[in-house]
Length: 320
Image (cartoon, rainbow, N blue to C red; front, top):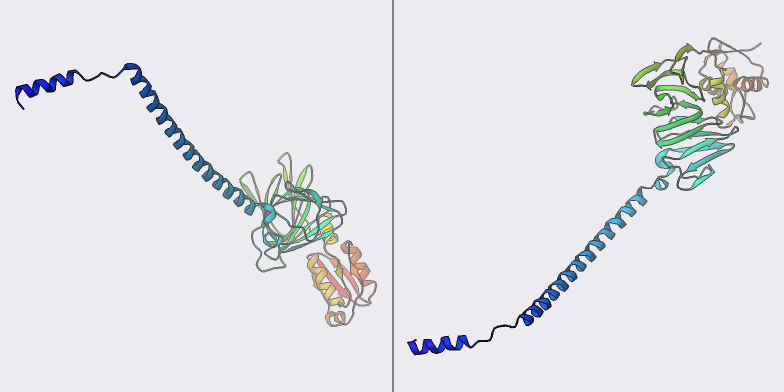
């Protein structure tokens, strides 16, 4: 490029038009508006994606809660079976209060309340039997843990060789058996634990108390406790459990079978005095239902030629 050409180029550059300030501002506004619109569209798309994802998560959570809801847990998971006598109510926060029936689906967190004529016999998953007496309130926490708010319970683990851990929570402590038959009674003032045979532990204020065979342990609301022997089979803390059991049909059974059953129910040893074979030949009729132990014995033996006597935990059988 020579000097002349260079001067021509510079001259042409000097003649270029400078941008108008107003046009520059409008152009900037158009570009900025376009940018904002693009950003807004991107945000909406991201929000929609997040909303869909949140909706999916919420749906999954709801379905999980539905699948885990207590009313989906059946009796077969919580216990084997149960039988109902008299007036018994089931209270659930999901379905309200209604009569407990044999086909009711029981769930953890539900409360079972017996009326003054009511009782429930629970067959637990480990094969043991739990009897709930009249005027008793319990709440099922799991298949091996209940809360006793008021009333009476009787737990028989001698029926099975596979009895597992079972905890009864009361106002004054947790009660757990160690292979036994025992009764628990809670009223407004006291909690009582009576052991028929075996051992029971009471955990209270981080301290453990062991209750042995034929002992009655009482704890009051003020913290005082008492331990004393209890030998009589017809003590009130036992007799209700005998009355609350399922009807026991005698039809076709022998006197021998009845005595064996009665002795087990009342933790008695039997002195047969060589009367076993004779007792096997005597057949009975009728049903043991809502009777005290004394009434049941009198009723059955009145129809036979046998005599009985109970002394120091032994049921003695004889003939005139």
